[in-house]
Length: 176
Image (cartoon, rainbow, N blue to C red; front, side, top):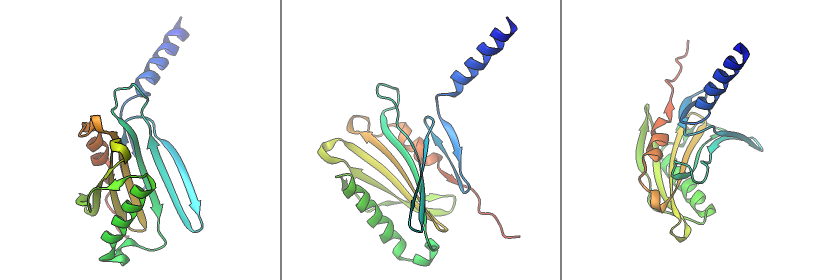
């Protein structure tokens, strides 16, 4: 009987923790995903990247179709790009929109994340299928891209900005 009770309690805890928002922590950041994200990695030449993504189940309570955080390591520090940084982020957003058969709707509004300035873009999907909300940040040698894909009938839902605003950079470590 005691084994049954322990097994039941473990199953109950596992069931309660398997769904819902969860914090994922990286070396320089933390972010909340609305479910368990899938982790992938990419290597192309000297460039390395990683992506966490989550796709809610059809018919669930989440009205967005896709969440992701991608990180790409650059060969040099973004600060060296100076005034070109905004143009580079815009061009990267345009290429993403083009690859999705979509249209970039704006030139990006400024967003601030713990002192790191980035841009937020709206991308209109083909055939009025929905909107992609994208944020981009450069920090050190890393480019961070956050994406939420939402169908038109669910635009403006609170999960979009819960995900976007949960992404926080950690304080920069001071040299000793």
